[in-house]
Image 1 (cartoon, rainbow, N blue to C red):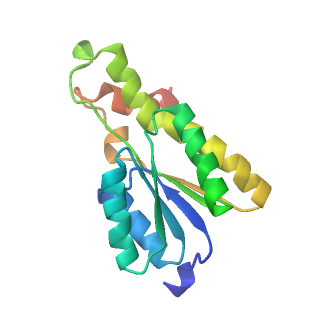
Image 2: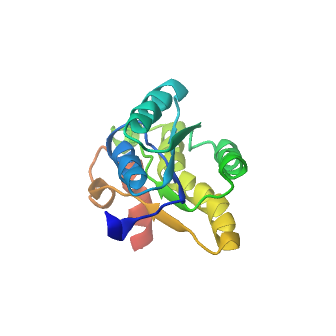
Length: 166
């Protein structure tokens, strides 16, 4: 881990209340970063942060729905106010609704795209502007193999990648 030290850096990891997001937060924390865990449920995030703190990791939480652009921008501003910097953004949050295209509602379509695509744009823009001012920043976008494999029951999930091939 000495080759991957990021001491003093602040990292926001979306979708960090379980799975890959929580493990990414753990690894970044073990490498020396202060990790800010994101998810929609403060209680769950706080339990995760407490576990990481018990492992000697500096961790805090930012409970907000990444699909809510205003909440995402406000969260970045709050992290900057509290931590004084934001060095790393990991866009990991994602969701899917499995059903045939004919059964999708427009609201469901937008929910998937807002969570998986628009949120990464909004957060990257908000964090990236500060990173540019700081002279340092890294934005990591996590994807799924399903995002490039078409399936009959995941049309919104594959839409951003399919559209980029056109």
